[in-house]
Length: 261
Image (cartoon, rainbow, N blue to C red):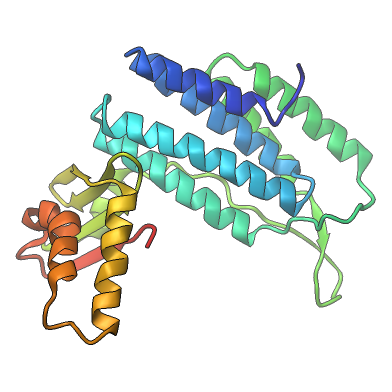
């Protein structure tokens, strides 16, 4: 139908159906395709409202893709790459300059070039071709000129290139007695990625609603001065930290990447 904004949503639904049918390799490929298309659309997102809608779509795609990697694919390293790409994208979108919802004069030639590349991206048949087109879109995006709020004049908005962060790169920064635990809260199951110099483990946890409910109760317990009871705190520990305790006990330093509440 030619709609840029609905295409990644429909590909995401197709990925969910494939995953439910047990066709996990096909689902994995479809999720990659849908996310690439969303990133291509982000290049000339017309307003903050449109940006927020796209971020919502991307969040759903990343959640589904992570659950696929953590569950049926049982691939901790791929799961880590997926969640880091998601969180890196979120940070980049916070830093980038997005136009307001007010109409503005547009650079017609640049927009036509972007539209042509986006159309080719949506029709691309493999990951290599999509990456090449995303690189070309980034080059066009880097030439976008924005006016600073302080009125000092125009300046190029540099948007960092998407980097495929690998577990090995993190492991090289860790000392032998250091551990990094990264939490990913989802429904019906959450996960913790425990990374050491020796490897990476995916530890399943209760769902997001359960963990955030326990977190809220533990805070209320402390705020009400009932800290000595620690009933809710114990339940939270058993649900959130207990399953991964074997990975960080004895560590000299623990790095925690939180999620949700």
